[in-house]
Length: 321
Image (cartoon, rainbow, N blue to C red; front, side):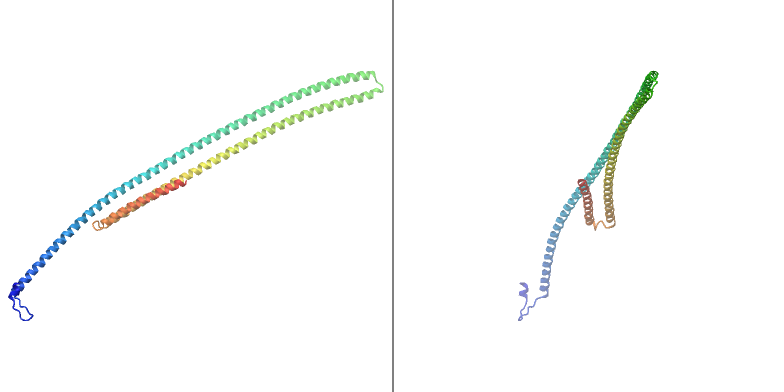
């Protein structure tokens, strides 16, 4: 208003004094500076509040990451402990199974040896009794044959003596034409006696041979049965030995596979830890802290995943078996 009063108007041109112009510019500059100052203050308050909220959010996220990391470590520790306990229980079960198989094998060996010894003693006793019976029968037959031969000899002597006496009496009585007929009759009687004696001897020999053949047949049958029993026992022993060897090799292979998987898992864990330790040592901590923490979480998750996969694979193999 003061400027408008102090200016003289000539057509469309206004004339303003220098002092008024400087005063106007100064006031305009102060107002602009005040507005910029207010804007700067408002923006600074706004960004400070945003920074404060961001810091609080980062702190919350860091606390969550720490809690998750502790939970992951606890889970990893529990999984490792469970896997080790499971491995130890498996080893214990396998050792018990091996001990049981060894005891069963030893018992089978003892039973087989006892059965074999018992059968052998029985066969020996049977063979001894058969031999004794054969010897007794032979002695009895010999004694009977001697008695029969002695009786036959005595009977022949008596018959000869009787015939001689009869011949002598008949010869004394008849020295005529009847002598020839008497001699023929005596000869026929003697031949009949001799043939009867020979037939009796042959019958006794045939009887003795038949009895001996029957005893030999029975002994051969018992020997064949013994050989069959021994063969069956040998077959059972070989079958149990093959089964024991198969189960032992299978259990050893299972133990070896479990050891290999456990060693492979340990090597993978150690290699991952060494790799991430090197990355953590080589890179700058201040710049790549978040990345390394994320890599550490990823490494722990990978290790846990490998442990869980190994455990699931082992449980699948156990269920298949």
